[in-house]
Amino acid sequence: MRSNRRPLPLLASLCVLFVGIPGCHGWGWDGHYTTCKLAEPYYSNATVSAIQNLLAPGQYLPDLCSWADDVRSVYKWSAALHFADVPDDSCVFNYTRDCHDEYGVPGRCVVAAICNYTTQLIDGYSSGNSPYNLTQALLFLSHFMGDIHQPLHLGHEGDRGGNSIIVYWYNTRTNLHHVWDTSMIYTEEDDFYNGSVDQLEAAIAQNITSDEVQQWQTCSGGQPPCPIVYASESVALACEWAYNGVTNYSTLGDDYFYSRWPIVQQQLSRGGVRLAAALNRIFGSS
Ligand SMILES: *[C@@H]1O[C@H](CO)[C@@H](O)[C@H](O)[C@H]1NC(C)=O
Ligand SMILES: *[C@@H]1O[C@H](CO)[C@@H](O)[C@H](O)[C@H]1NC(C)=O
Ligand SMILES: *[C@@H]1O[C@H](CO)[C@@H](O)[C@H](O)[C@H]1NC(C)=O
Ligand SMILES: *[C@@H]1O[C@H](CO)[C@@H](O)[C@H](O)[C@H]1NC(C)=O
Ligand SMILES: *[C@@H]1O[C@H](CO)[C@@H](O)[C@H](O)[C@H]1NC(C)=O
Ligand SMILES: *[C@@H]1O[C@H](CO)[C@@H](O)[C@H](O)[C@H]1NC(C)=O
Ligand SMILES: *[C@@H]1O[C@H](CO)[C@@H](O)[C@H](O)[C@H]1NC(C)=O
Image (cartoon, rainbow, N blue to C red; front, side, top):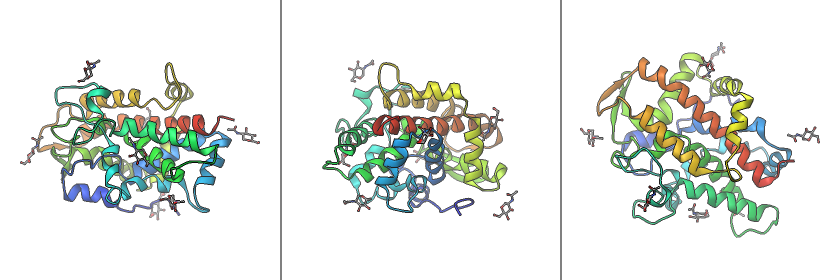
């Protein structure tokens, strides 16, 4: 049922039409689905039943991991929570400097949002007494854990995370941000997995080693999630891989795709493993 399903994500397509809308950031539908599905093998029993309790019967979390994009135009306050930009001459994340919205209001960025929804779930789930809608908290957290691992989410301010860098992906005109959100994932699916997001996800899942799981689940000096660490990794990857060698109107093809795909795969994997670690910390590891 779910395989080969390719609903064109509404907001991803809007990103193409209105290139450069501020806040048009994050993996596309397949990237978010993949992140949330990659998390599944690492869930504790407590996490499995909490997810079940928070969703309606028949709902499946990976199918809902793009919900936060769908409500972005309704909940306008949430747009800034999908990303954080750094100054154009920087390749490091500085929370004080970089975590704000377009008006400069501090604490309005993906790093703070991950902490916000983690806290809402920790405080409210076991007490059964929360002022917040915890289903929405779960869906926002699952989505933002994906977004923060998309390197161009932590991109440069001047080009809006690559949104205003026009590129040709093979023959198709798009922008650099969209290449990382969507194009590389779809090209990989089409070229190697018969257009099936489930086959791609299964292949990525098989590639994750137990050493990586061990390493990614851990936050030095604290409990997962540690979004400042994830943001710092993403900015470094944005500079080293996403922007590197690209100028306005570059044509990107096999060379770019084959050298960058391992980064995409690694970031999807980290997002999944770390989402599971965060949820296990929230709901209990037993
Ligand atoms: C979940 O519970 C089952 C049976 O109660 C147990 O066999 C299994 O190891 C548990 N799984 C995890 C991930 O704790
Ligand atoms: C981070 O940014 C703030 C505000 O611009 C600055 O005061 C601080 O020194 C920066 N921290 C580091 C480690 O660069
Ligand atoms: C925290 O969550 C609430 C409820 O969704 C929201 O109103 C608020 O803007 C969020 N703040 C951040 C920084 O995520
Ligand atoms: C919580 O949010 C979900 C998803 O938006 C919605 O379906 C549900 O009705 C909300 N629950 C309450 C009690 O408002
Ligand atoms: C790329 O070119 C377009 C139009 O030619 C321009 O609007 C955009 O700002 C340029 N991008 C950058 C990053 O300079
Ligand atoms: C590829 O997808 C097509 C259409 O969905 C299907 O008919 C075909 O059996 C698939 N091939 C493989 C190798 O999975
Ligand atoms: C899995 O890892 C191998 C070896 O590193 C690599 O060739 C392959 O492309 C990876 N699979 C996926 C789905 O990226």
